[in-house]
Length: 147
Image (cartoon, helix red, strand yellow):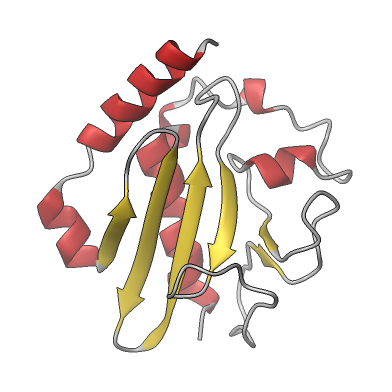
């Protein structure tokens, strides 16, 4: 995938993020300029989570997702999470040494030694792995376990 193609796919995906849906869910977009989508999940009942999705090769590669504090700095650790199906891995990812998202559709998952045989190419054409749906899966994971 060349950069122009990746940018066109990214821009088309971002254009589908409806402002009313964003507001209703408490999603705040800080930046949506290719190749970065910087988004926060907010809810008065839990701690805010900010994510930076790097999509320079979308959708040849899945987005790389960084877990951030509300001020945009990288999280050195995840908070004490509630019990439940957890996609947030507190251990350091081999590439970044930081906590990471361990979920199909996220580059850190597919690059991790435990999942290198679970290829992104098996998922990228599915409707459930559009950029918008990946963000929704991240949000649902946050709703389940984030304090």
